[in-house]
Image (cartoon, rainbow, N blue to C red; front, side):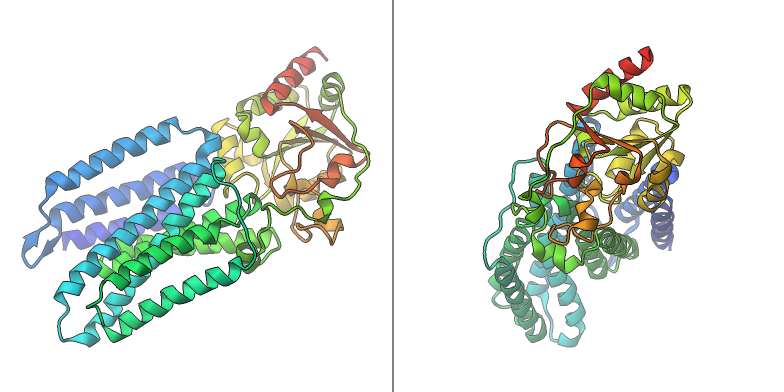
Length: 466
């Protein structure tokens, strides 16, 4: 009875925490609420769970594992840079998938040795075991590849016929699993491990060709996979809190994936099979663009200082340069001079969902100043200056005007509607989608080259002297 109450409390806190995560102002508290519920569920399971009158025992191994995981997780979380947050999310998500797969492997070994004659009672159990193993291993392998891509150690890799090979591998996985489940033929247990290995291979090949521009969608999708795999573990153990948590993660990840695809005006099938953002440069990358205009720091400082309204568009270049605090300093300086300053946030800016919001929140930027894409687009026409800091594809007008562009149809921040546009970049190299940006060559656009943090520091110095 007490354990059931612990699980109920855990489930409720998961739901409340997820709701609080929907807004930046309450996200931190929501995370703590859900973590507290998880702690209650874990402690309750360790000390209160009984099976056939026996408690868990093995406390040395249980608390040893908890201690090691806590220390390692804390150290990683403390040391990780905000720019590396997407990699850390992929790594942790992969660990969740690995745990779900290991649970299925252990339970398969158990049921293979103790399968009784009551065959009809084992279908659901076997389906949960195989789904947990397949989905968990795909999530683990895919997340590891995503982690490598995000930190630059693994490059995009695509080849002719990759879709057919992936579909073939999945057909093999499901075919063997279906045969083993519905025939209840577990005498040849090595087939299960073949499924496990092929699932790992599928996870690698599934993510390898997907380019960086689609990585936020992939991370969200893999996160939903891990949630579904965890829910399978909840079925296996008839554990309500594990089931609830897995379903919430799976559903939230799936919905977020769909919303992000909508924000990019692309189908999930197109993301997974189209190799967008990979090694292929679209037609926009090879056409003649004309010349661009470079602006001096003093001129940029004057334009910003005497503007009535400035909109800042943060991108991955801001994150790489660790320039969020300097950007906030510029914001406060402009406001002291009577300038209205806001931020325009694209749904897929950065390398993971909410990446830019987290960066700016770390620098104590007011949540009220962060405008979503739809709201920001309504204000660009009345904006004197847009300052683009390291963003590229999410401000490319080719998405609206060039049917030959790979990003055509993707909703963008319409910064070209403003009176003046200043773009800070290290160079004229294309963004993660591998195509040129038409914005850089428009008459109202000026390029301010250099590291984002260094450029902003110099801008601040110049504006103070204006």
